Length: 80
Image (cartoon, rainbow, N blue to C red):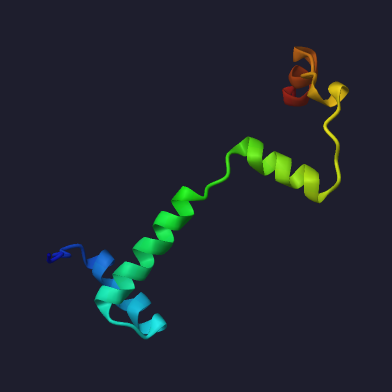
């Protein structure tokens, strides 16, 4: 099946990637799409990122830390 690229920027980027990777344009598209799909499937949620960073920095999320700050604390932070 053929892909017809009519977008000049898409064509330019594909050719640039193919040249850098020293592959054909078809292979460049395959590589780029595989990498893009892999990145999309392996995206961390904010909660996963926070958990990973806590583990990395040896931070324990105790009961006190789980309790949200009162509204007044946020109001103070945003007052000019």
